[in-house]
Image 1 (cartoon, one colour):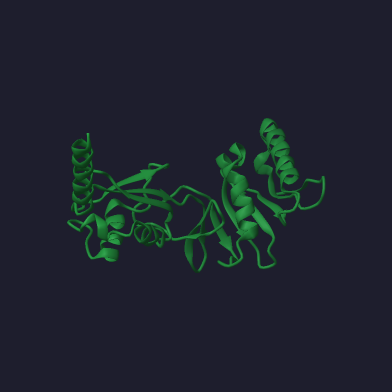
Image 2: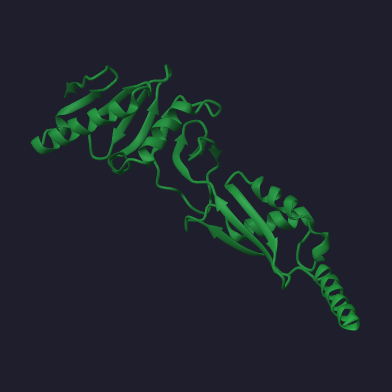
Length: 230
């Protein structure tokens, strides 16, 4: 019995030592969530290589997985990353990309993601999201983010809104697909009520076939829809 225990202990220690010095294979990259890739497999592999000077054929015991994850998350298109080594020595990286909800197109061009943060444009893929124009400050995206997030989660707005414009006094305007008029929201307070008023107006005028008779729809006053005809 004693000999058997010694033998089992020896085999376990041998296997652990062998696993520890096992060479790492070429990284396997898996993207979680959306299929559209703003960051490529090649970009992820390059980030890993920059951190360790090449992760292929690196002994498993020398890898700091937390450092590799932080290196990946340093990319402004990556929201989260998990790196682990399988028993067979395969280095695996699971990547969750940021999700853009609006695209700023002013003197600078970039996305706003679903957490209200900056996200650079990608040369690999362009997201179909509303454009943001006007006076936009990268360090003050609160109002733009609030309306962009509302658009993302509302089927009517997602289908119809093509542009968000912010004036120099921070007033918000919307442009709708195939409509001549501009929607003036003003600030983003009482946003749900304003959007409900817009929907009621849109459905009524669509039924009457008079949507294109207006140049501006003003929703900034409580419980009022002020329409300017062409």
